Image (cartoon, rainbow, N blue to C red; front, top):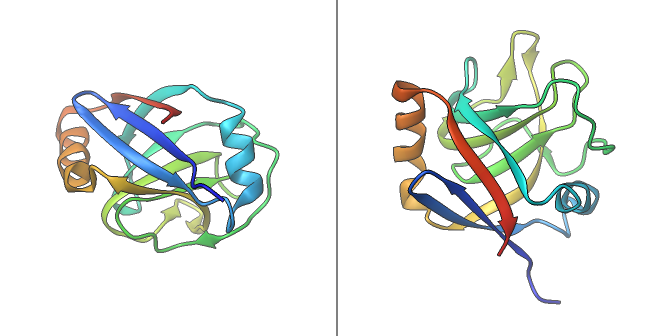
Length: 139
């Protein structure tokens, strides 16, 4: 079965990410339905070296699958909501996924496989310069 990939663009940064369809099939399917997905990415408040896309009460219609609280750089998570708002977590360094409610776990549904050398630069720019546009497309 061929792997499916997404292209993620934020400013001058382009990443290629593999959909984790075996481990998170429902999350991947729900996200693919929303493509192209365009939003803003900002720096996290509680989770360490990561950015996030806050989505409020947006519903993807999925529960938890392949969930983790400690994603590695480039392991993109979708938190389907519950204790905190729905969000996408975009880690670039040491990260412990949390909110003002405490620790969270999100669905690891994408893994950056190209462009990972630029994750930290995007994260630091977002920290110091503020929100950036971000777009997810089929690769």
